[in-house]
Amino acid sequence: MKILNVVGARPQFVKLGPILKAIEEHNQSGVHCRIQEILVHTGQHYDKELSKIFFDELSLKEPDYNLGVGSGAQGFQTGEMLKRTEGVLLNEKPDWVVVYGDTNSTLAGALAAGKLQIRVAHVEAGLRSFNRTMPEEVNRVLTDHISNLLFCPTQAAITNLANEGIVHGVHHVGDVMYDSVLHYANLAEKHALILKKLALDPRRYALATVHRAENTDDSTRLENILGALDEISARGLNVVFPLHPRTRRKMKEFGLLLNHAKAIEPVSYLEMLLLEKNAKIILTDSGGVQKEAFFFQVPCVTLRDETEWLETVESGWNQLAGTDPKRIGRATQNAQSGDDQTDCYGDGRAASKIVDVLIRSNWK
Ligand code: UD1
Ligand code: UDP
Image (cartoon, rainbow, N blue to C red; front, side):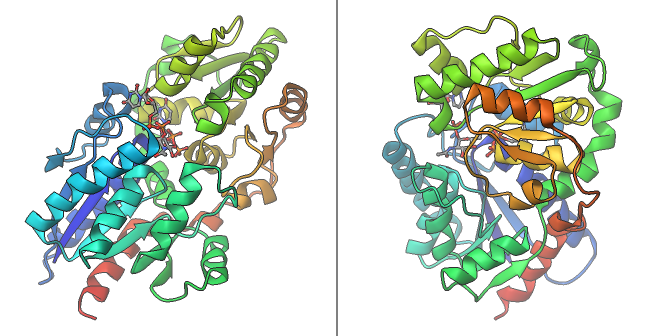
């Protein structure tokens, strides 16, 4: 059986890790159905800090194809990926194309396969923000509607799909990012020196990330968020802020500066895990970081008006604060521990369940 994985952006490298490991374990188990795996990197993320560093740290294989698409407007970027992925698919003729999450690389991979009648499996299917102004929401909805297998991390995702009439090929497997955190958290402890490097004491700092287009590309929203981070820092809680290049570019374009919060380059995955685990609080608009805060049981303030990860809010660990500085400040002050429950994102074996289903479904 031949599986072709399509990835392109930072969080997808993290999601790919457990799947490659599960494929390797399957192949080493001596069963007769061997999986041949082909890896396609669209090139959506290309800076070392957003791409190569993840391949090195997570020991991911070199991509078989790097499409080198790079940055661009939504339609241009997605269109280039679609065109270039199609060429690879015609060459490789895989049994399955596996796509991850909700980026333009996800949609392009799914669409290229769907149009060639190659079966599509979507990892992290069924998530919804119900905000169609987000490019990610468009990518999620369209990808789910052309997928043959839909691997859902949560029960809420299954319900979302059912509400859109998608009931076939749906599997509740848990979250591959949880698999990854369970695997790498201890390693992070041993190898990442980031706390020392930044002179941070555990539970004495806040960790912040911001990169969503809705926040970075609107000068008022971005200014509000940066103001809130500065205010938290000025009141005595260090704020460490690994800057996504999109955010850095927009700050420059809008002439926005930080006076107190500490902006640093994007950090590696192991460094990020260590920073998350030891933070007093996390402020973010990232989907993955919201979940990782929950996995580490660190209170989170989400700098958005809605989230796809409802369980993190319902359990009390995560508060939605949008971008109003007063609301962000209040949420940060009021943050506290939530329920002591983590099993809503699975048992850490999502990836091997996904690989099992792919093999079983190949014969149908
Ligand atoms: C993308 C995804 C988003 C995901 C995020 C993960 C879409 C629509 N968005 O957002 O869902 O949460 O990745 O981080 O797919 N840039 C660099 N170097 C790079 C990559 C990007 O400088 O290696 C800069 C460029 O100025 C680029 C901008 O960042 O225009 C945005 O990059 P892009 O990949 O389009 O979107 P992200 O904001 O990274
Ligand atoms: N991440 C990282 N370094 C950083 C910021 C994030 O390693 O400087 C990791 C983070 O731990 C998580 C993933 O990148 O595993 C989340 O990616 P991102 O926030 O870019 O995208 P999203 O999850 O919102 O799609």
